[in-house]
Length: 417
Image 1: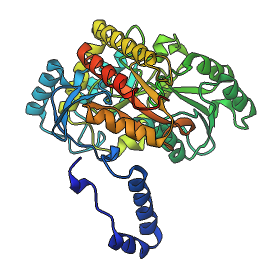
Image 2 (image 1 turned 45 degrees about the vertical axis):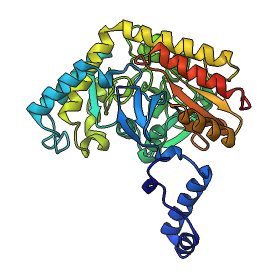
Image 3 (image 1 turned 90 degrees about the vertical axis):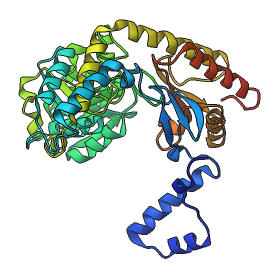
């Protein structure tokens, strides 16, 4: 079990106190009680604490050596010696943080060079770096669209995209997941000019692990004259000959106006970015409030990100090793009788029959030293209960064999989804 301080006890006094609350406090307390009651006794997925990291995919959780199959460190670069050395050097030379936004006193040489690095990586003339991937979507989408505009977004889009749509002031509507025909219908029915429509999709959807129909969707959008934005948060470093994501892999670069991404997956740090080829979009940084009013990335993070992007650009062997391990793992999981939500890839989900089976399997895996992500409604498309996994180039073949062995053992006692 995790530290008991993370699990407040409930009892008659707590219930009575909650019952006396009204308004905002009552609504929040009721929500908290529903979350706690959702999982019952035992380890709670929301409160798992990693006590120590022994590299990108190995940890100690509650005193138990654990292999992390729920990390987004696809290439293991958060522990790469080159990235750590660059980070340490920047830490000594520039200190721990910028203490200000980019437009105040937080615009350091490292930020400018990082923007040049990411723009060059994507072969585009301009880039803007944000403090998180969430802020990259929030700042970019809110900077592009406003009242009177229309945003059409894939129904499986990340929460940061949906929150950005809400905050933009624009009208927004979802189209069916990966469905060019439904997007075409919405564009045809739109009552605003196509030049005021922004179409948003992802390159790789991280809940199911399925690839976005970027080229087909973008083709439809451009035929109508709409702007196209693709979120390559999970695709960067994994897909495409140069590691630039699904947009590159599908040959859709010429159809995409803006690419948004994050440094918190393959790059191994924190931060986000957008890149564009449109000169008209260069003033975007002055319209993106998430850029204007947020402290800039710490120098150590900037230096590590720049180094990692260079590795992604040049080390194709690392990406090939990731795919070898991911495909072997996924094929083996399927051979055990488990149903995956998408074609084999570095991130995916195993379908469970319901919350009870999902929670039992998640706890059983954790008890055997395997950490994955338990995803439940409303955070999952179609109301499915899923065990999400991610494979890293840093996993050893022994790590993968151990996970497969545990899954094989569990099939003898659990009903397979």
